[in-house]
Image (cartoon, rainbow, N blue to C red; front, side, top):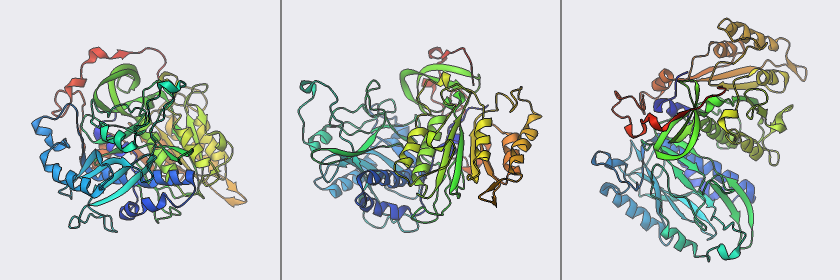
Length: 536
């Protein structure tokens, strides 16, 4: 199994974008006032992050304020570059009396000026917001650079971190939120903005060593109850709703998810892992094995030790090198955004497969026997919460690759008309428990496809369509299963992703001395520890 490199990440990372980007830009502020508090936060998350993702993924690279500075040859990555100062000044003037503290900017191939994303305060004074400053978009999604810069709220209701100490005397005296924001440092150091403190926004950003990744991470120290950046809806006296925010986008991925209309009903939804989602009765069977912990994008610098799967050595490895993105994190991000974007009438089921008895061999409980309608109260959030548990446990207990029960579950639930099956490795055993061999490929595909003979739902003929995705390897049996069930086969590998991206973002051989763009600060193998034990 080949490790996924930066060029492959461009196709692996989730990429939710609506074709009507301009409409999203102008309607987000209206959407966040249009419904109840929890629904408001969810809609705010979907629409605001969708817009930001669209611009990051259409960009050449991001631009940041780096605490360590940049060499002369990389000044185009620095927000301190004099060529960006006029834009930053214009944006600050547009913000008026509200603060405008730049988080990052994106350099678009079709624009002279960058598009800037900055932290500001909510209009109600109870939290923070992300503001976008840049040229407006035409209805066809093209920029109109001849017009003046346009300032809009992209993500509202970012929480102000509360004091969680049980001792009131340990909590600092509250300050005006504008004063707090003016004092905040958003510079990146070793790929991360600083850990946030009480009253500061519940948002922390991470990037990779090439400054193409934008990722939201835990804004606080690792040993507290906060695990993700989040939004809140609150009044002067109480918090009425909370919404975790999950975001990953990669410059020049340009893998767009489109929906056929603004409502999200009936359109085609496509991602990097899961493509052409048109069904309203769909199951996802996703690989939860330990090999999904493989790092696909290394960050800048070192941090606490973490364990990852090394596809080349086929074993786990512990290292203090910062990993900005694993296969599992990329999958979780795409699943989170897809679930958020599917229509209320869509019914889904989710199963994570690994080895029986291991932590990631589990199903979303609500959907074990029946599909669940996303529009029913609390179900969309419950599905997202389940997906985000897949990297909670130690990777060494995630398990191996045993997809058979998950596949059969899709065939047995006759309401399901489409199954999306994803894996990054060959099965550990054949369906009968024997050793997996090459001659098992075709007969295994035929075995499961035979379930479609006479398959009906409510007296109507309903064969199951199986769409398969293989990560990091060519899978003959997945390709055969898709063909036998009128599904499609999606291969996430080096050749196909480079072809899809026309060579953009190619950074093969992270520690290969023949690679001129390799970051050799991360190539010291003395810091890595190989771990023994069962591998997936």
